Length: 243
Image (cartoon, rainbow, N blue to C red; front, side):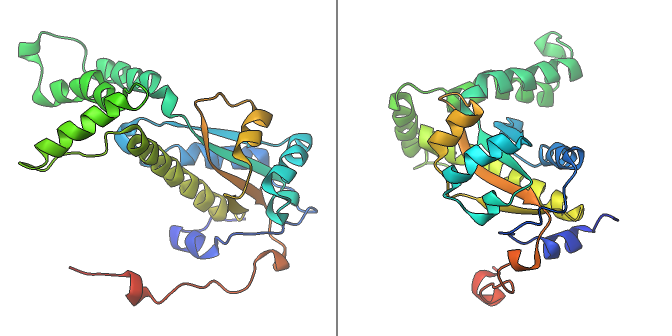
């Protein structure tokens, strides 16, 4: 099976609700698609995500009722749980800084380029300032400061804990979409499922308290009845605005 072009994959991808259990999918191919998913753009390259690739039939059966018995889960060959790990920001910031220290070996400040100084300060100072919080109090203080500063100049305003949570989920969603398009390019099908008891799913797969589930993606090969009708979108003119 030849891989599809980007346009072909976009047009092929549908949210499939019923999979053909007589057509197994290759776990290695799914893993490759996850490897491509981590190349997705994400905020500050913090990569605050983890992907749980579930191939165990026993675990899938345990998760099915937690997805309220959806056919997309019940007939899935495999599942991929996309998780948000905002709690790992210190580790991810350090990983970026370690990478920068390899690219730009430490040297006296006078010998550092402006790009080098900015990049290292970004992960040493700016990221901790934005991500660090204490029961929402520090976030509220940052928000008020930014509100006042924003009266005089353009300023970054998404500094509260709930704002950073949204940012992390947006990045994870970009990776999830990249994964689904990669699967489509391989001729495999997916369905992103938001309807689930995320607390219980977290317990099944052993996620820590600080982790959140972005979405559960079922995987397989479609049955004809698994695609519920023709794709419908509102007229393009209603959503496309040119300025």
